[in-house]
Length: 94
Image (tube, rainbow, N blue to C red):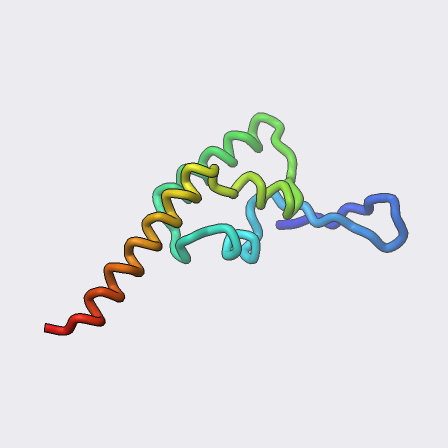
């Protein structure tokens, strides 16, 4: 569920949601299926809400879901090496 909040400027609203909206999840998640990590984050968010947590804007959700720099570098490294490996295999058929 999401909420539109008037921000005090003519016809401008911010969209807030208790949980990550699908389009934000699709833009920030490297995988397109539910993982154990997603279940962990869902449980953590439920506990946060029960302790008084509030809905977040899309910008806040994006920042919350953004991987730290070490994770981004590791993901990039793995992608680069995987791509080179596949290119090498495909260019040298047996």
